[in-house]
Amino acid sequence: MELTLSKYIAFPKEFVWGCAAAAYQVEGAWNEDGKGPSIWDTFVHTPGHIANSETGDVTVDHYHRYQEDVALMKSLSLDAYRFSISWTRVLPTGTGHVNQSGLDFYDRLVDELLKHEIEPYACLFHYDLPQALQDQGGWPKRETAFAFADYAHVVSERLSDRVKVWMTHNEPWVTAMAGYGDGEHAPGIKDIPAAFKALHHLLLSHGLAAEAIRASARQPVKVGITLNLNPVHPASESKKDRDAASRMDTVLNRSTLDPLLKGTTPIQEFAIGRLLAGSLIKPGDMEKIRTLDLLGVNYYTRTVAKYDSKFPVVAAVQVHPEGREYSGMWEIYPEGIYELLMRIWNDYLRPLQAGAAPGTKMPEIMITENGIPVPDGLDFDGHVRDERRIRYLKDHIAQVHHAMDEGVPVKGYFHWSLMDNFEWAWGFSQRFGLVYVDFKTQKRTIKDSGHWFTRLIQEDGFEY
Image (cartoon, rainbow, N blue to C red):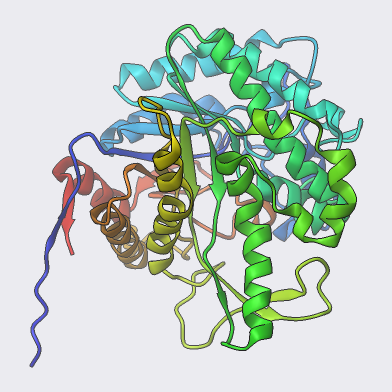
């Protein structure tokens, strides 16, 4: 009989443990207190877009229940909370008139977090573009990047006396490709050239907003961005599949990492990119984009790519290997988070560090999202025994620790998400939270995974 010895995985005392959420997914109050419509308000109210025709009109009602939710965060011993700000709650039409009631809400939320000794990490954009700006062309239009910088200035001016960490965007790749490429997300457009334009303008808006935040900040701040990143593996060792994986990697990963960390773009590697590059990328754009104090890594799964000539741009399709474990949405692949962190460190940050002038501050790395959707439910005694989520957390956090042992300076880990909530096109069918929510009564119940996460934070580690 083979004995397996467990080991204790310990993290530094200063390591940041948190949870993340997005405004549209949790706030509700979609048309209250002067808030304007976003593209997601429009999208969910158009039949055929969302599973079961569900909407985020109310979702988990965080707008009215934020005090209860912050108390939950405190009970979980969280160090930090990464939340997003609704652009249309602050600027109902995206520009011009500032809605003070909207700013007041985020004012109260930040104060409540600080009162409970939870560090606020504010993200300015998580998919919810003002509908008024979409009506003028949205992210494929260069003007939207400058409107975003003006919005960043307004919010920073109000909150930067207390908020020290700012993320400009959550997953600009998803905003561009799912919103303008395949149409799964709002605004539901299927136009590949528009998606490439949108991605460049999203990255440009990051640079412009970073300038605006730093210029208006009322104390020293860190400005970062969060990226959805997947290791890409070929479905076989054939040259066609390996080339397909390389192209998929360029679109999925290098299209955001290269501009932000190298000041270059790989889009010219594709015919559509070569066609667009001259008119799309203006002098000075890449220098603007390459500004980063903090790189947030959102990791859920890997991509396995197979050659398929029917698919535009990459001539590749994602496949799902048999014999693997899957969640409600993706393959479970813990090794991928280690692979990703090592790649970012070896291909981007270490060379950057080697070539930097003495005293240059390097971007920090954090895991800003990681989690699993599983079909949780309340047992007869009111408990939620989500053993699969606990196993997922152990396996992925152990891989983060492995990367740290190899020299990658990861500064924190944010679980997605605090609570079950509205999961975009999936509606309420996928539960990611450490806290179970009864969507009819709004009752919150901490799951077993939430209690496990609390012990991890309090003990700075766990037995694995």
